[in-house]
Image (cartoon, rainbow, N blue to C red; front, side):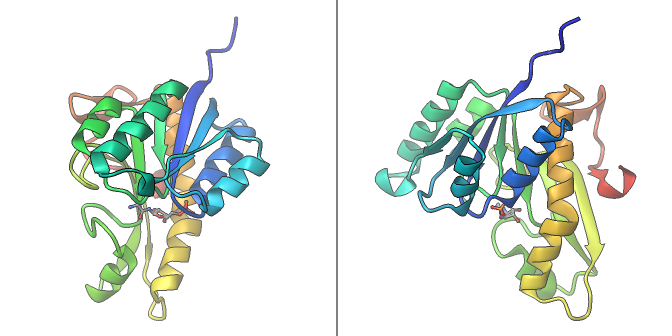
Length: 219
Ligand code: GAR
């Protein structure tokens, strides 16, 4: 029997690309049955592009500064994405708010990772917010992207206890190393294998709606 075709993955970044790197490593290790068909960035100087080029991945820069408004930029990004025919669109440190039209075009096949335990701390400055609010725990969430900012159905979370001496920089580092680089490859692997789906506005895992997000501790 032939192996099922690899899922076509488009990864959209704005910055360092550590999640991109973790995803690529998981593909190379055979943990995600997928191929990265494109790495897209809204910033020409994104560090993640250097990694992608060195890894031989196709890269595409769609600079948001070249477009008059959000709608025009999103249309250009969507056109580039459509050209790649992705099965899964992975937002990996992509720091732009997306228009409803863009989200609808990829709804159900677009995931995001957010550096907080959603629904806590949507938007920016999540680590500072967790410290300000005296949270006992912090972490990250993978969720399907819907028009509500950081509000789509959650898939998996990972968390840790905030230490007495943790500052913003330490929290950011812990979120990345202890949580994000583990939960994102796992979530994308489930999507690529068809175990994770978006059905009637909800996340469904192995045929059942997810009432609450899966946990890194359960893996
Ligand atoms: C990650 O911590 C990700 O959760 C966050 O940016 C970082 C990107 O790191 N994303 C957001 O804040 C999205 N609103 P990376 O570029 O090294 O993967």
